[in-house]
Length: 363
Image 1 (tube, helix red, strand yellow):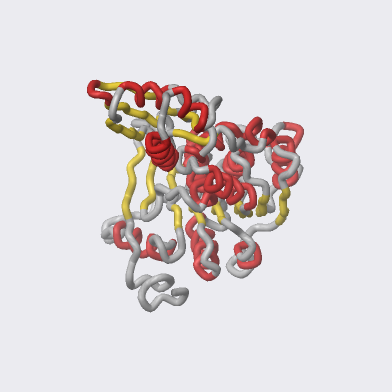
Image 2 (cartoon, helix red, strand yellow):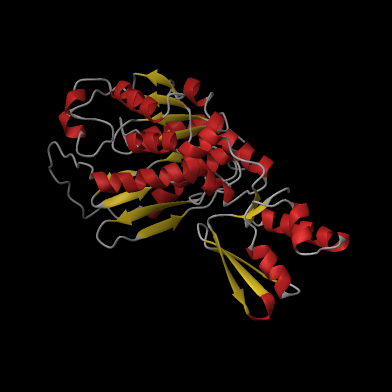
């Protein structure tokens, strides 16, 4: 480390007996340490990235042993994401456009080579988004804003008037245009380096494999023919090719589904979830009568869809980083518009799963 600097998102408090508390405001983590004397306290609090190791040593009259101990202390604080080396800058263009994303990365890795690797992981990833509706459009934009440059977008729909109240990117002048074309146009306005492979079709049981094979991550936002069916098609293909995927959720009955994140053979898969949910949802149907409802269609509510999409996009960035652990592994949630609470249901890996169990077909 040449020029140590306390990160801009880190605040500090000096307690009695030379105890310093560094508070990482983004992750709400604390690093507390006791230092030998007030001189070292002042040294640490003065790290602004303007002086190198030799200049700091001279300013505080450190001998060679004290300087060695100081360097070890700096390395420790760097590993704890408290300080960074100001001599090693982010790419200026990247920093201007993605400053907050890069700051987020530094919450987890502050060592220069490691954080550059994480950023390159995100930038070079290829995300397949199936379905550009009320959730898929929001996810595409949020990932583009976070630095993702390579997309495959799959959707056969054209823009309709009924899309405008809840789906991002579309306006009245876009009615009748292919959704993919409009989304691509707007993604390029965010970042001209973005590439989009456009697939003007609905997925089916056999057509998804070719797109899954080239993906870093697949995000399922499709509801045709049903969400359950697309989840099985995409889930099985992703297990076959060992690709992480996210069930992006949706909206129904004033609840917003926070779908599960699946890392093949490290978490419960779609089939694990299906088996467990079928057990949970078993009911006595002997006294039930079928309701006659024609043309039942429950529309999405924009803010609710945006919540589901934002959580899915955040999980996606974690996966693409290859460092940050996703939160929605082995669980799915429901966001209640009335209470504003998220209730999660934990579902663990099924050892007898037909796909990923002990005798599973894709093990």
